[in-house]
Length: 210
Image (cartoon, rainbow, N blue to C red; front, side, top):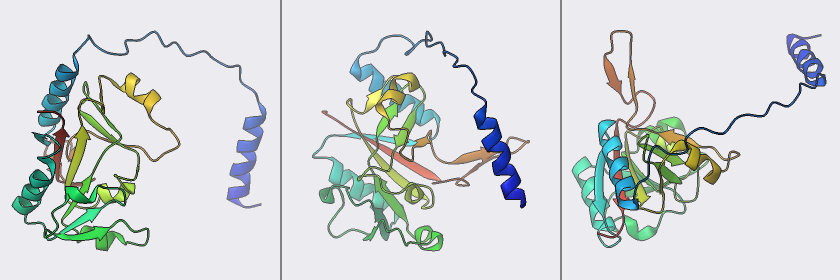
């Protein structure tokens, strides 16, 4: 018998024991205070900025020129594009568009300058963007390997107050990615290093009525 067989056997034996169901209390706060839609968006923007994300605000008409400017300022020559991203968001004569392909290698993705996505929703109280691999977001890895991520959030409809409000709106079977600012880590001496686990630069565009 192999080690794998022994481990799986122990798991099967453990699963035969039916533990009594335990009711989990849900009487915690689902939001800390009440806010208007505008206040909720302002709180999200403030927390994103605290995490060193760069926050922009615009309306639908201003979105394409804003994205074009952000890519130009970055000097991006290529941009990763999820299959469901609205085509008009990106400049026609801008960086080379790289489609989100299953066969792309990590090295190929690392050579891409920027990625532009939408999101599933955003959490105001934690300054968190949630991706669920929807058509306008693409595979999880395209937002982890390129060094520059532009993420579009529709406000106020995609913004909720808290994590307890967000969870019922998300499908737990989908590959959820929770982003609170650019990738960063600190060692025991608290030296902050950005870009280790994902993009070094996160730009969040809040799109709504101006």
